[in-house]
Length: 291
Ligand code: SAH
Image (cartoon, rainbow, N blue to C red; front, side, top):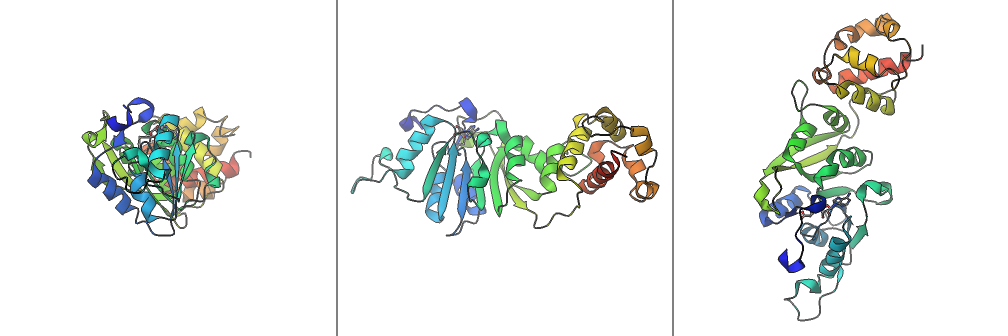
């Protein structure tokens, strides 16, 4: 890193420098010749350099202009014949494209990736996870802060289970692969990290009347996680477009209300509802909100 005169630390810049971990991440992505990979936050290109030789195309999004320039030198520039020493002489990859910009402002649907591999900038973990799940891909191998990784993969009835668990797991199966200690990065972050595998579900296990509304209900009920679900819904009735909450929970459409045990659900806290419960609740509210 000193060779590049980069200190890191700002803008979530913690470069992964532990070779075996870099190799393990690449291995987990099970890369094949015809894969098109998206890397978010390429940094100095430590991961990129291992991915590029294995795939058809690698798109790297990097916000920091200085780092993007370094990667251009390192990955794109062709090496002079006989020159094996200078790190700036480059590897000359023809299949790498560096996109300079903020990944949260880029339209990812314009990038035809089928896999994502990244040591993510942690401050956008939540936003980028929700965003990538809107797209179709085969698998994502992502480094997150360990605490966040636990939340993605959490099951109901625990403190880690929340909105991001629901939004992730209704679309995909997240699996924590391994923890990564902070000293494997330079500069070392203050937190531990973990690599997660996110595999989108082929078919969603729950039926939703409206995905958008499900997002809103999820937000509402996890917004105040200590409250009973019925109170959170009442509190957010404007956003949820509900005019008459009493009537709604009093059993408009009593068959559905009883069959799906909605009366029991609304007495619980959000962390005690699984994804199917939340889908049922959301569909019920969606159908009856304007009655
Ligand atoms: N993949 C590299 C770097 C990881 S650090 C490695 O493992 O060594 C995270 C990287 O994300 C940094 O290079 C940082 O500049 C970049 N970054 C931070 N916020 C970003 C954003 N919003 N969009 C794109 N890149 C971002």
